[in-house]
Image (cartoon, rainbow, N blue to C red; front, side, top):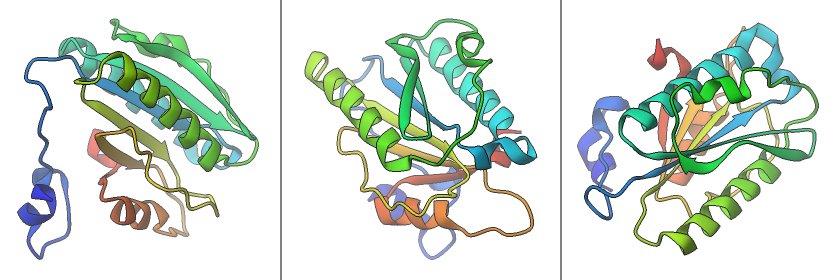
Length: 184
């Protein structure tokens, strides 16, 4: 709610984002979920997603937070980095991630939510973040993952036709929305 209040009537962007840690100083868990479907392969979107995921994991390492990295495509989810203390150069562990298959957004988010639910049982005071890196090319409209305290959708949509599904999903979930270009 503070994020929405901060933006007033202007479009939401990064300067409006507000967060509140549940326990000061406790390491957060950043669950990074990468869409590895066939639509992400074109235009270098999957490569960009992997670069963003590596940058997020490195930032978590600098803050002494925890990280998990998952990818989804073709009806299944893979865990590339299980939940745990972030390590330097965590991106090396998913650098060879390939893409292809359908966009199993609902399955990937359900698996990420289950991972975050297990983490919440182990560490109930830990702040849990979910970062969804996707082009939004899915007809599925899953609900917001319940176990995530904070959700950020990183929009990798590009090309001639932009559908705007990620911005709509972020608005529906009350999640933060970032364009891939925001990561440089």
